[in-house]
Amino acid sequence: MTSALKNKWILITGASSGFGAAAARAFAAEGARLLLGARRVDRLEQVAAESRQAGAAEAHCRGLDVCQTASVDAFLAWARQTITPRQPSDARLDVLINNAGGALGLDTVAQGKDEDWEGMLQSNVLGVLRMTRAALPLMVSNPGSSILNIGSVAGRVAYEGGAAYCAAKAGELMITRALRLELNGTGVRVSTIDPGMAETEFSLVRFKGDADRAHKVYEGTQPLLAQDVADILVWVASRPPHVNIDELLVKSVDQAAIHKVFRRKPKTE
Ligand code: NDP
Ligand code: 8X3
Image (cartoon, rainbow, N blue to C red; front, side, top):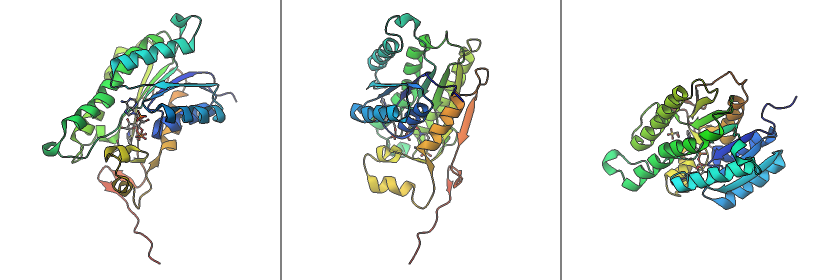
């Protein structure tokens, strides 16, 4: 059976690693056409090549920093031109995945650093607003198109050291809800996918390259994998055009709650 996503245009931010890279490969397997953005262009090019191998009808990539309005606007101008080179005014985007973001540090508010707070709010909150504003002209005349925002359990439950990240993901949740109200009647669908703990480069970035500390986050437990989230994104985007999956919370079976993670004891010989 032909996939509902075959030849559809999918724009993914943060496609150079983790959920974004896995999503690129998963949409590629459906025969979709991809527009991939992130700051590490060498990694993006690798993901685009893997996506072509996985079956993408087309896979294009370009540098993108969602913290800069000029970068976002230049990316969307390129996307428009790539989708319909002859008549860019007719370009239609089918799926926008606002995935770029992450956490910086695990400091309490008392110890918090301005650059970490600003970085988290810039990418996770303002990045979603900027990307959505720039992409909407390609979507409002395309009923059944989808905006899929990546939130987090952290946007729903606070934890120590997570004040700014939790605030940022709670911001993403409110942006998603407001946008769904604003777009009512256009046929554009708006969803938030909110994962719990998943093993990607997330903790390596949070702990500024400290691989040992990042590794400990997942020790003894089975976290979600990037592929799990990618499968969900494909499923949400391929529902019939009248179906809007509003909010989807997904956690590993080992994570009963944000603070309650089951960890297996290391095996002793
Ligand atoms: P990764 O660190 O593996 O991926 C993050 C991606 O975001 C990278 O591709 C990175 O690319 C990109 N990115 C970061 N900042 C920017 C920026 N300013 N402009 C463009 N791209 C940017 O982590 P995940 O895949 O886990 O994270 C993806 C999303 O999922 C994030 O929003 C994160 O908050 C969220 N999330 C993660 C969870 C987890 O436990 N892993 C759970 C719940 C939500 P580059 O550095 O090349 O720009
Ligand atoms: C990432 C999940 O619990 O580390 O959004 O904040 S958590």
